[in-house]
Image (spheres, rainbow, N blue to C red):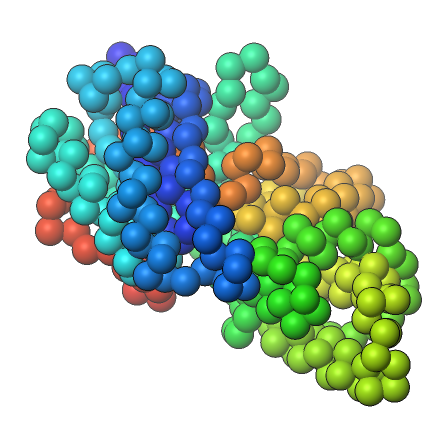
Length: 342
């Protein structure tokens, strides 16, 4: 019998709903919130209000596009966390109400695990490559940077993580100081294509093991700009592309250095990337290059699955459904990854 999962994602500023049947994508609807651009970052209160406005039409559209009704749905998967608490409350409360109204069971999903399992969303008519277990996943998003060993669809081990800023935060915070707008990652990526990645060098961290740190390189860039702008007020405007290219290259170097060590330590050569920063063209190119040079089998998600989308929530719900892992109506959202026991 086919398994049909409705996924709901509301962890930050995108409201998304998706329908998967036996892992195949039937729909993936999203409403983005442009209001945050004027503030240079996500405003939690505005995000939760927008989710309240968007969630009903987004879920309705996802069902309509998929050509199904709630009668056809076997379970409702929703993001429990981590994320913005107000945003998570909207999605969690909606999932509870929908479950009560329809009698469909609920499945809570860890947003970060959803990013990792986005590689297993299948699309009709495509090759649908996915990693074999075990594999390593470099999870890079706005708020999290981790190297994760994945031994099964629901078996994860974090080998390394950031001890301060995530790589996405480094992109966004530095872009804001440079006046490039929000979100900063795509703008830096675009400008980097026009610049010389060898033009400048910034301080790189020396963190033991497989953990990351990005606060130092971020601070290094800001002090570098401060000192150069004192000498030449037009320095940033005249060197914007080179600054972005150099900064992006150094960030990618930091990411790949630890990933290479993780591969050597584990002997696992199935390597994937996921999360919002996995859309970065420089990172995608470097992963391909390192994979070809080192004999890795690499997996890059489709760009539409790098964002906070509900397809990744639905596929995680699919795997949990197969193991009869459901949740109850007294479930509460968790805003921080550290609150999860898994």
